[in-house]
Length: 535
Image (tube, rainbow, N blue to C red):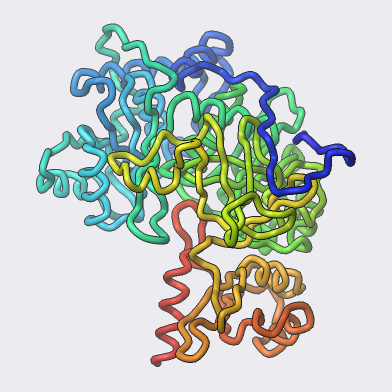
């Protein structure tokens, strides 16, 4: 359970000190793997759907494969060099992640949805020396694309088939001593606003982030089995799934891509106790006609995050699956920084980010004064922690703009903190809609609209307006079988919000355009509004 503040210690300003009671582990990711292999060599570490059905790899076998792959990497690289991995979720991907850790090289996950120019940019900026790429991804060969792109780079990296690293031969030899403070991962941000930046995360940060993340998800089962179909190229899976299960020597279940039937099959076949999702998956699961006929009795906790989800939808989901829902918040710069608890209210789970994780100090900084904001006053969320990123790779100016001299990470997220120390998200600072001089916080409007029984997911944004500067717009995805029009939603909002906050432009969508990490691509929503206006 997360730490509660006693009534006598209710906050009088939006600052919460770090909970430093849990001991921090001075371990590398490779040491964590080898420790698990020594203690639980036969326990399943990874289960994944392959050509032969459900494949299982034990901790002992995973360590053996990773050692062999690490020694092969070191025949081409030195510790500190960068290794790119480009492919959908696979056993080979996880082996490559651990191999890079054991070799002391730096993992650079590449989003499978990136265009060629974006991949070339990230390979160049991270100075990737080896690329492990999948043969096939949705009918296209990432391996062939990578080879063509590599040939045009200033410093051509070696490009090798990712699948060959699933069972790489072990050439023998010593592995280097790696410091827990050494870089483990360069995670490029989603790039929804501006050019993606490479957040550098240490072994120390990732191991402890994962450990504290599992502490808030544990179900009490003898062995936890976490099912997550989130893509491994995002920190929400490479750290918050792979290393979360490693922190307790438990089992990760995954697959290449999200499909409701495949997910339900995996939960049944593996006896999954924990499920990692984004909000769109929640909606798809509830809408699935065969949901009630499935045996999901082992499932106890569902961890979600991202877009605004109504308390009613969370209650329906908890009742339909007989589970407890929790919500996590983080950035590439500070993964799993906050989360709710299984015994929090449905409203807290739906409308807040929960409380800061251990060893994370949090404050809300007033936009008007620059000091600590009053309780419940929206401002920028700052986080100070030894688990924050080391900085942006080869971008000192951008690093200094978000990591100040006192080690506070300026998240760029507009949040508030209540007297309990619970944090509520109001949107990105850049996403604040300024309508006729009045500030409109998208999250506030989203929470109101999400309370409508017909609404499943909603995103609010600002559109250019020649007179007001900006006008408020809303994109809405409805619950299955529900109907409502813009006029009704506008009236619903007008009863609960000041008139200047009520959306005046509306779009209804079957699904939202998402980044690989499940974030809504608001730039695409703006383009859709613009196209409709000019049609």
